[in-house]
Length: 194
Image 1: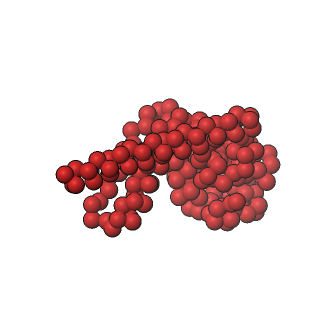
Image 2: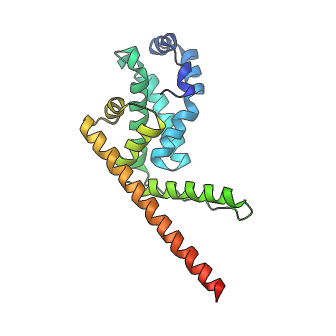
Image 3: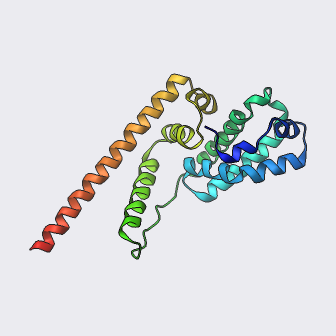
């Protein structure tokens, strides 16, 4: 499944970018900027690092545009460049992101949603880089297993193993977090009953 921002990438645009057409490149950057930053953020978990990685990816895309051999593989090629930029940024800057706090004034259902988002973010942050990359390529970039393994530079079996490992770790972390929350809620309820 291709996301909406990728639908505007036509074979003509790819051809123009590869031939050095600045206006096509600028149009591509404008159309893909948010997707690129979000993809990098999902890997890096820091908005400033994600923006820098996305910027570096777009520079590298233009710089190495002549190396694209098959225009039909532009999407995979772009994600390879993007992921490599995120990996380089990860090596330069250790992850220092913090989980945002919840505002107390939110209604109960909004708090539950925020707690779930925070739990997922914390679980994602607890993953190693390879597992996080596998999840991002699968669930955010909507790549097939084969495409994701190519983008990551892994054998297909390695990609599938890392994705399965990431899913298990996320599920366990979320279950452990729910068990702690239930235990805390029970303790609070008991203290009110006394």
